[in-house]
Length: 534
Image 1 (cartoon, helix red, strand yellow):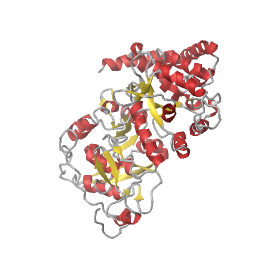
Image 2 (image 1 turned 30 degrees about the vertical axis):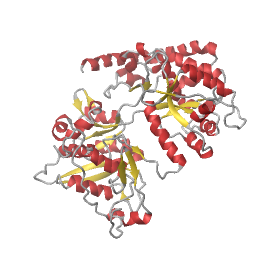
Image 3 (image 1 turned 90 degrees about the vertical axis):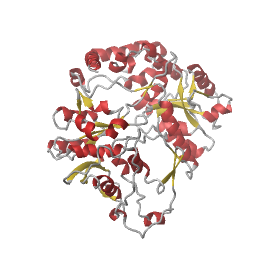
Image 4 (image 1 turned 120 degrees about the horizontal axis):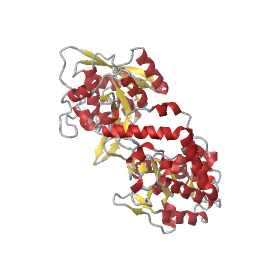
């Protein structure tokens, strides 16, 4: 336990000088390229989300213990005065547009709206960063190597794009405790991830239709489908039918999934299961993101397996709170054509840029380079080692304190906006696990479920092709006018089997005739142009 001085109000505390280890991944000194003190004092203004959630003791989003720590650890050694400019999180894109239009933007801006940021660059509103990164960004070049190209368009580096370590999107889930109860053993792959053949999956769905494993006497719907708004989460099943050997890179990049070889058979499979009574016949009543009906069936023990985001599942948490013996695990379905395929997120997060109005753009790159050092990132993610946490192997173990001990410490334990400092990493890039020690059983089980789901969701993962933020004339012409394809999945899942082929084909034909063919043709031309330029 560290010694602590008398209590000091958090927002007035001066952040103690805590030395940050000076070695970054790859063995290059963390300060290399960005720690030479300039002859004259300069400034740097950084956009900061204001979420309206700070406390009196914490301070504001732009003036608190952690902003002071940034000044002490980065600003002072570089003779840079760092200030933070608040932007409401709920209207960030609108506010950034307003600031840019009035030439009042801070020196560092950011947004998840990649098209907006890249358009600023094309319109001459941003600093081109290639030379600055080469000179002042050795850590950026190494630690964000896989995302640098996403900030480029037509040979210009308009943005630095945050790295997303966890790219898993959708996963399958199943009640392992029920499988154990009937003597079915889930197989694992070489990485220890659960998986199952389509044949086994189909047999299990039929078997559980006639079982009552929860002992409630209610009808079972072994296949969980999420409502009309998001039936696309069933694509974890559909993707098991993708004819990967015949899915070309061009088709993957330029065509909607529904045109891919094998996709139709995956939807047909769901149609078959639905018409055999294996899914809730009223699943389409869930028309928003709360999934009330689905979560109710799941938490009441009436669903065996389902597809969902790789994240915390509300219905599973409710299930665990009522049934301590329940065990839900992530898994993937083996592709019927051999090679696994699953859509994953691009390894990207925030798009970070430097407006052309910035007087010292080298300061912006120095700052972002400093943020990209893993030992700095750890401070924002976890606090200070030995104070806020200990590292045991690859596991982060939080150090417990009483409220009185926290209040009397020279260190701050309120971490309300700390995540918003960490611009260059969307998530934690270290591969650490967080200890579940001291957590209640439900919280611990949910944390493990989410961790395992991300891993399962990455098997066979392929991100969508990056078109460098370029929109074709057809994209602009038909924006908002083309029929939605994914939104037709509920219709295809629930139609009569004898009507499936004609319904599916009509949906695709209507799309093509409404302008979809023009969109596809121009995407193919753009794809070929971008590939030729590589």
